[in-house]
Length: 449
Image 1 (tube, rainbow, N blue to C red):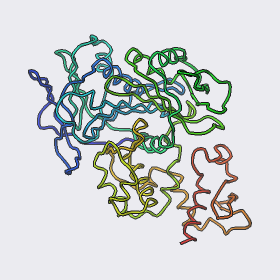
Image 2: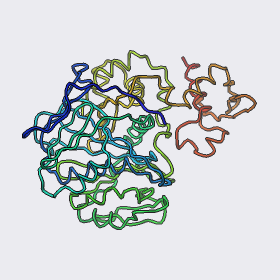
Image 3: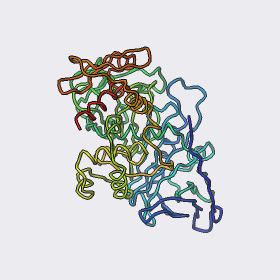
Image 4: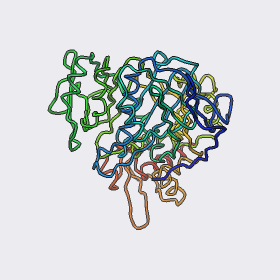
């Protein structure tokens, strides 16, 4: 697992002064350009108990490894300020759970929220302080580009910025494309949410369960069927349990239609002044980073000018509409989708299920080609460069890789539909196309031009 390394330079140390928690920051980007020492937020949390518990939950997910839970290392949450709210995000150590806390405008009391993104270290001492804080106690929060500080009473803990795992970048890209296809499938009032979540196991072996809406609640189902919602690895919702006394509702999002097998799902706990969402991969042994949901869009020859034009329009907007982006940029909807895929693979897009809209963030990663983070895309381009894709013969195209020959089935319009390789046999396209199918699709696109 690789990490990005960032040098931090501060004008002065962070400190707690009378009635003010001052945080030094180091580097960042705003809609006005780069800023050496930006400030994101300085004020109070209006619902401190719920916010503290939810921030702790995000940190606990970052420290958890639900698949083979041994030797887990605590990873570092990401915080984004986009003008009216703060979003704290993390992935579990196994990469199969994405957690996001949205502290909404009604949960913040202070100066206007700024714009920017950074990763923060929320380590064991800070987690312990949040666990032991006195309920109802005033909680000050100041967030800068390079660090996060939480003031509890008269004590202050300052957490320094640390490297962000490269695997998270792919996870951020994949979860936004997956959840953008979800529908709201169930909504439980507080009492039903508490009852349901308390019945779930806190430990387990990653079993897949199914539930269906029943009145105001959810009931178990023995198998997928009409109305069924997948709950893969129910023990992965453990992070929600300490928040139950603050919950006002539970919303469940999943793919539309009747599932044929396990799917990802998202579980959003509504809180005073915010919401905490856990998105679960289809299997506890399966991380989000390898889902391949963007590969077909990334395979297109997208002009760098398109990507740059859209990047200039995002500006940390909390809600992004592709139709508005197409109108503002003058690009066609197809070109907008392809350019957004490249921005997503750089971690610049998230998806908010409650708003049914994308939002902008800027992860602290250096730019790079999409191929550098997607081995299947890199392999597909190599196959094309080596003329490994043969002509169509009936409904088959042959892809030759060294001594191996793979047969890719194509439709009447030349679209690749399946492959004889091991990857396709195992996943059946459920984790995106294999490199052979991708190469055939790319070859067909070139031939149509």
